[in-house]
Image 1 (cartoon, rainbow, N blue to C red):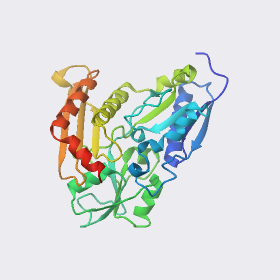
Image 2: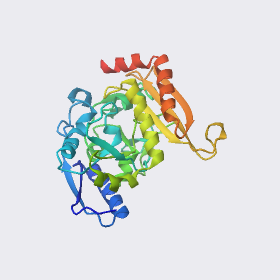
Image 3: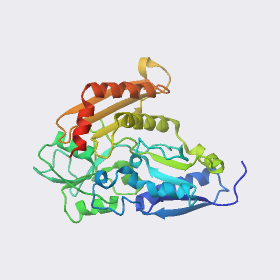
Image 4: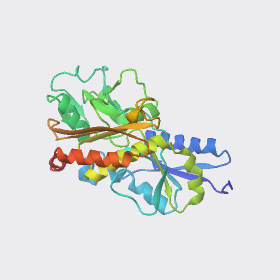
Amino acid sequence: MRYRNHPIVIAARASHLARTQAHIIGEAIGRAHPQAQIEYRWFQSEADRLPMQRLARAGGKGLFVRGIERALLDGEADVAVHSLKDVPADVTTAGLIFAAIPLRVDPRDCLVTAEGLTLDQLPSAARIGTASPRRAAQLLQHRPDLRISLLRGNVETRLRKVRQDRQFHATILAMAGLIRGGHDLSAMKPLDPDTWLPAAGQGALGVQCRGDDHSTLRHLLCLNDPASSEAVHAERDVVRQLGCNCHSAIGVLCEPLPAGESPQRDPTPGFRLRVWVGSPDGQRTATFEGQAKAGRLVPLARDAVKSLKAQGAIGLLKEASRC
């Protein structure tokens, strides 16, 4: 490969987690291409400037990525690193592509309390901080007595408000962010995906560049993990086909099956896709679970959407949008 004579500029949000994730990608590029020079630029997203508003009212998940995507299009940066769960599934920005989805980190959600309690151990009518309709609905499905209050901010802010300030009995955070951020996990309680599904793309990073920037693209392609990429695209496909947005209480997880558990004992690697759609109070749900081998996740996602619609998922999603 001919090496470029100018640095690869990586853009990300200015939070500690976003900077850490950008450095993870920069170091991976450096390992694969030792002669590459890496620089970083940090941006405050529109979502970061509106810390007390619900995303759905402020403009949706796109608030996390618009400014960074603009920097790419304007040539201020060559690469953007996003938490993929924050990237809308129904909008593709013209001129930009996801060149790589690296190996996914733990996709689970995690209950965070000051005392290391489980969900069942929380006191009656405990106050839980979250800005996620999905997390709120799943909390109320398991514990209808809980009081849900708005809590936004970076990981450190949310941890402080639970553990030091005691403004909330608990919050829910993504395990991937806690792991990448180097936080102490000893008192964290991961939530079992058999009963609690994460957001589509949770735990995965999306590495984005301009579609016509062939030099940068060549540097990024080797970072892609095919299994993670296929699984995450299936999750996002379900969300897109259902027309979900920031109001939506939907959990989606597509995972590689353990060896020997592929459909019909096929030696080709297989995946399990699970979807949960809930009413705002979590008391009415539509669910799907299915398996397919690699390369067959597109029709499996279609089957999931068809099944969920037959169970009334669209009505549940519309109900959430009115809240």
